[in-house]
Figure 1 (cartoon, protein in one colour):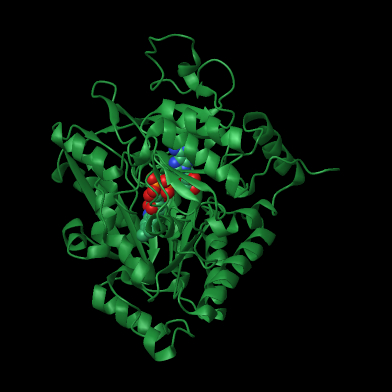
Figure 2 (cartoon, rainbow, N blue to C red):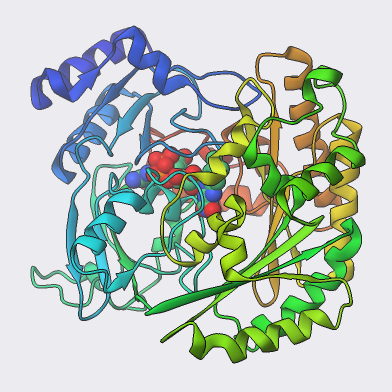
Length: 514
Ligand SMILES: Cc1cc2nc3c(=O)[nH]c(=O)nc-3n(C[C@H](O)[C@H](O)[C@H](O)COP(=O)(O)OP(=O)(O)OC[C@H]3O[C@@H](n4cnc5c(N)ncnc54)[C@H](O)[C@@H]3O)c2cc1C
């Protein structure tokens, strides 16, 4: 991509979208290049702001003509995974969120919404409340300004029965890398009157929607999101466990409650630092200059201060009233009580402990900021997510807990993890918080991430999502046939390779002899 190509591209976009459709100021380039990764910022060549699907097609066609690489973002709040940063410096960020932020439809009878990329969790939540709070949206416990499309396409998740954000999306509109407009599901019908686009996931032909998750084959401009009827009452329950190895018991207790679907939410099983870490800087960071992990004694003090355990379990029931759910709560208390180690924390008591209030909000479909405090556990703003998972087998989950904790300690970092438990699988959300302004700490965070990935990979565990610095690294862990299949699809849908080249390690060139 030469500077002549870029100039010709920006001239074409300025001609079509006007001056306000582009920003190439130094300040904007700096802001859009910022992220929390160890590998440094990735300043783009500039930013373009489409206002419609037709604008996106125009941008993609101009990029094909001038061979310019684009990087689409929705709201650009993918903090800890890349923020607004492109796969490589010098790509042109397509910021869909600035102008394409309309809620296109809310169907109260069939309980779904249709959104553009810039619609944030907070915006849809506010609109649902404005309409009488009859429907509930599944939210993340991350930034409220993050959006449904960016999150679902990155296979993000929440905590209510509709936790699987890609799974509970229905019907996409996509501008492919070749500029063509694709509608998935029932939207593929050649008709103007589509009545099932956002209600039926399994329509005629192959299911193409999944191709647009964690990939770079197209730019999604519209998505259907399924909503739950808002329950009259949400009643949470929480248990604190004293020891690190209690994870084994906890997973064994959670599994039957999820397999039978007795508990409708996912279980958030968070360690002490995942919860206390959002409440202030590490009390030992300054003394060790960030060289050492927090001591066991330091963790104990934090737990005592916040009324939490080494592991903390949270879940919730939905029902007509708090009283009506008492028998369900009692049954869960009885089960956890059998461990002889669980300390019960009631809904009311949890509401007074800010990190547990985050869990209550997440189960209640209410966006909240509390967990963002984790970014300040160490100074300097460094933050990456390591997201492996384990089967819901207590012994296996605990082995991985021990392994990752040991690796964090070897690199002088602080083991911070939440296991999000469903029936058969638990996603292990690990936060690596580090001082990005300290070269040594940055290098240790990077080495910690890579070492954990290699160690869990050697034991048969892959990550479910990855920070932008590690897309190529993880793609190299896959089978050659997987890489070639991705390359073949890329070549078919984006023959000039203009959309986010390298995102999730996908390139358009097949490997020979695989
Ligand atoms: C403390 C904390 C807690 C968090 N908790 C959660 C959590 O509970 N669950 C969770 O899932 N995440 C969580 N996150 C991660 C994150 O905040 C969200 O996933 C994020 O908001 C994603 O939405 P977005 O609109 O910001 O996506 P963006 O940043 O806009 O995009 C995300 C990725 O998708 C691609 N993309 C975006 N839009 C399009 C498009 N229209 N077409 C094609 N590709 C596109 C982009 O290239 C980018 O790589 C957390 C983060 C933090 C810091």
